[in-house]
Image (tube, rainbow, N blue to C red; front, side, top):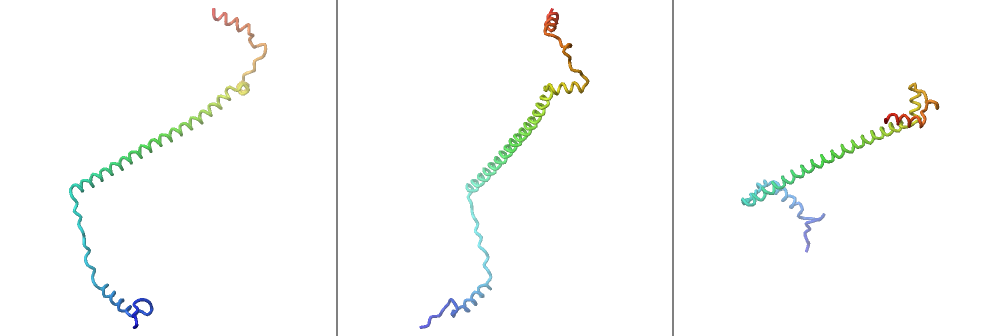
Length: 137
C-alpha cells in the first residue's frame, strides 16, 4: 500500500490545496457583525460618577502641583536673596575692617592733609579730669 504524502517534497495533493485557497480568496468577505451593548441606567450612572471622580482627582493633582511649584519658586527666591545678602554682608565686613584699621586711618588722614599729633599737643590725664569736673559744674 502506497501512502499519499500531503506534506513535504513528495506531496501529492499540494497543488489541489493551493487551488482551493485561491478559490476561497475570491469569495467576498461577509460584513462584520456589530454587537451593540445595552447598558442599564444604573451602570451608566456608575460610569458617569467614576468619570467625574477621576476628573476631580486629576484637577486636585494639578492644583497640588501648582502649589508645590509656587512653594519651590518662593524657596528659590529666598535662597537667592540670602545669597545676595551674604555677599553684601561680606562686603560690609571688609569695609568695616578697613575703617577700623588704625594704619589705614592714619594713612588716609595723612593723604587728606592732616598731620600726626605731637607729644606736647596731647592732653594729659590730669587736664581731662579737670575739664570734666568744670563741665559737670
